[in-house]
Length: 473
Image (cartoon, rainbow, N blue to C red):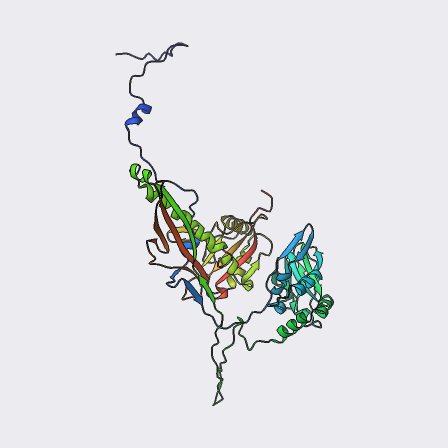
């Protein structure tokens, strides 16, 4: 029996011989405890979880609406070469009086007549009461629409941003006057078309003049405040007056949403499934991660797909821009005021952080709410849910989506089909494709989905949301 004296060994003394089995050697006889394969790309997918999903047995969902008339301007696209900006000729059909016009030569000649003008912040572009003699296209920047407040003071009644237009009625009514004042809120670039320039093009292209005159004279019948064909009613009458007759007119060309698909072919070698299936089933683990990737792609398509994605299907009248850049409480209040029963707000995590900073600056308490056992931020009682699929542009701007959901509430719904062959999850199936000569087994993994906006005010977007710090940190 040896007794340690506590004396430090002399320098250069040989190491003592190992007296017990080392851990490295012991591990050769031990069984390790393993985790399932992990995947960093899995997100919370709040949008997919919060959307009410509707079964579409026929693969197509038709949204029937009351007949409505399109009023107001759309958005146009520009081409930039250095500091010079030009409008894409075909995009001029976004102007209300040019919708449906297909003569490319006339549109090209009209596009060449636009003049570029730059305005400094605070500079007036047009003034109420002055002659309205030009069409304006906002190429870049923010423009405030100013009107008279309830007590005669000046009030901001709207914001125009990249792609917005105003003054389109000038093409048919050159003798009118501006009903509002437009002022540059930031450094702004606009393209303007004087009526005289339009007149010169119309003199050479008779079909252009005829189209504008026909569109100007094509006045719809009575409308309600939402642009729908009005239903004639009588109320508050006494005696026996003649009651108005009416009917509800339907849109003759309703929007139809076909189910989209995201697919991949999963390949697993038979040797792997034969020899290495314990303690975890290799095919199941491969399939689990493949399904997660498909679900992530599905949510990305629900947000960004140009056909049915929510960012591209919001009506232009339901889009507003931030007043100062970062998202403020005033901006979110305005966004919420544009629809009834907003159920959810979705934003990129960086946009949520930017909103939190603005609340802190104002000393406003950023409240929370319980959603499915998760404590999440909320504004005015509406959950503000993170969605990393909402893009952040190179200029560090993003968007915030507000929506009402559900068929019963005329909101936004998700679409899928259940009961499909070899279904693994609702709307997702895995089909065996066979084995090739290299003994590789193939499985086709597919998910079918889409989204539908039942009425225009079911979804709104706060655009041009700056997510970076103003101090550059």
